[in-house]
Amino acid sequence: MKKQQILFVGGIIMVLIVVAVFLGTQSTTTELGETVQQVSTHEPVDIVLDFYGDWLQAANADNTDPYQAGLVDEPLLASTLRTRLSEVHGAEGIDPVLCQPETPTRIASRRVYEADDMVQLLVFSKEPRQQGQSIVTLKRQGEGWYIEDIQCAQESVAGDSEYTFEASGVLLKESVPKPFDSTVWHLGYTENDVYVKVVPIILDAESVCVDGTGTESTCDASQFVEVTQVALQGDMTEAGVLVKRLTVLQ
Image 1 (cartoon, helix red, strand yellow):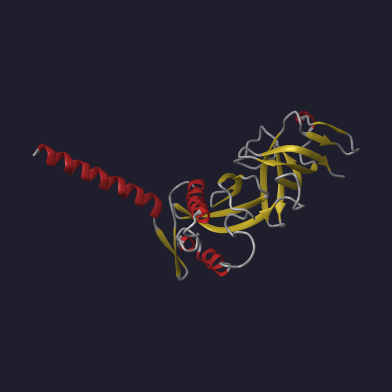
Image 2 (tube, rainbow, N blue to C red; image 1 turned 180 degrees about the vertical axis):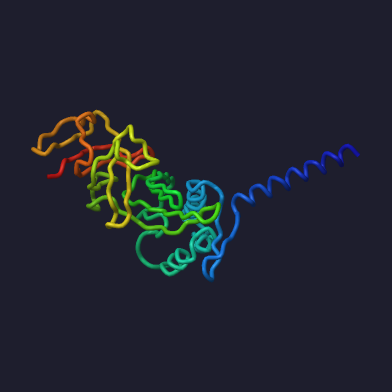
């Protein structure tokens, strides 16, 4: 009798665990015109990394690929995104989700924009280091989130560049928008004149800064001036861009 009670209680606990997982990942659905968009109450970064983790695993598998695994039908993707990914299946070029010429073995992400109803994250290759990045846009609907769009961005202006990040923009610190940390310097820039992005700047002893006269020196953040226009070259990390060269633009 005691054994049966233990088994009964254990069964209830398992059911509660399954229900909790279901509610978190399958959340609610809300009508959008004539379509129904499924959302998740998980954090945006967890939604993105779960999807990308499955996609990366299938892309590296010997006996399947993301399309055969049915990942293009992920209900947390917007219907327009599912359609676009389906249409490019088999087309030449880089993977439309990973955005890399070579399938990564490890990926990382970083939040670049956040508002009440929208979040944008960069997903990039951690191993091997590559220049491509995915810009993943999530939209809030009700109490949950869904992935509205994925765009590929090649930050480097030259395909054979030694850097994994190159962009021109303005230096931001006190004027950086929330939720970014106004106690550290950032680069604010745009991608294709559409995506406004902000990335933290990391300096080390090898970071070289070039002032308006062309003079080179080791970067000193105390000499930075708010909204100065600069060209930045460096390496993308999970914490931000490690500056290799920062040039003040005239």
